[in-house]
Image (cartoon, rainbow, N blue to C red; front, side, top):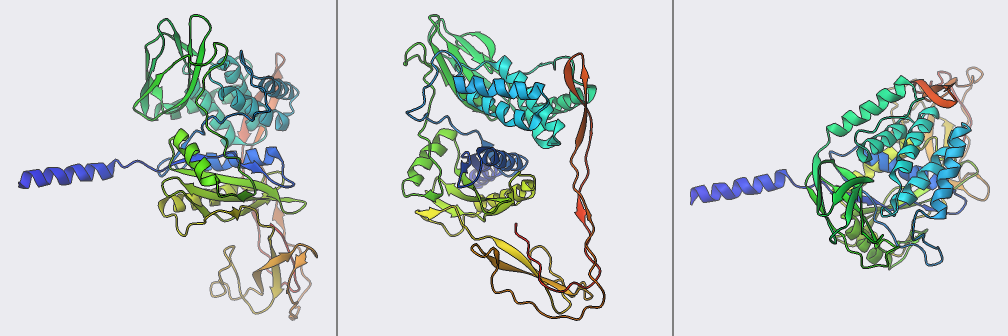
Length: 471
């Protein structure tokens, strides 16, 4: 009896030890009033990248393929015209060294092509990923560049960079391959009609049934092609075990029967039908949570993102704190970090649920009023630090912003003795990693990159009056 109880305890302990991390799917961020598709896509990518760095605490899974809108025609024999147009415009912008335009166009083309794995051209995807990485290095976005190289290494084992790229770029790609080598591996088993050929990420695996060993964890793309031109496509997630795919040609020969779910259609307001749509979305993605959000304009220079976390098992929401960043999404890294922190906390403990209908958009922003008063110091979280710095003569308080008058409400100037003229606060301008580019044999190539932090020095002289700033 004692041995039996001990065995049960050990088994339970082992079960808890290997408990899976929460799985989260990020629904593409919607574009609200006054915002741009580019800003919504870029902020969503920053949040996704930030959460992926927390892989010890959460698994970010790929979103499922959603059904296209009825009014949009779907290409039956190859990539859609929209896909090819995005890739062509991205390549042209890259060749013209217009990297800010090349990146979103190329990423859009890649996403659209991968959404239909049965017709995807993986040589084109590989070339586009190299360009996305190089363009991001050129614009100082090292994190996104490294993610693109990691995607390339996962989809194309043994890939060699084309000539023309400098040694430093080659080294970054080799680092991505080494990072991938440290990730868990699994296998993919593909079955299908007799005589059909299996492909994984564009690689010909031969006749079905086919098995591919040592496949890196992450998202992969399966295609099965019949002897008469029939095509089947499916997006899979490899998680260190065996992923099985069974193809069938139930649809017409010129169209791949890709598993699709209805688009949840995220908007400013979350309606009562959203839980049902998101439950189906999470089920298709193999996730327990879904992050939804919308990016909208709050001023001439600022966007905000309203977000909520959906728990599929409880079929309820937890509304998250709104974050604000500049319209060029240059200051969004910090906000994506904060949002990722809150997502992790809420997946562990959802807190008080928010039931639909509710709005993801709030028009209230905040301003900073600097009022000369008693010697205090307030940190960015609003906590009084006057004990640590008794010589300070300013206090920072948060006030709601009047959207009509465009000024803080109920802020009263407080007179304070002026000991000397106020001197401007010197600042150190932010810098980003800079890649030096040269043309080698007609090919634009990136050179070595450097990076630096930015900072602001606090004023050491007394400050009086009221100053407002929006964020």
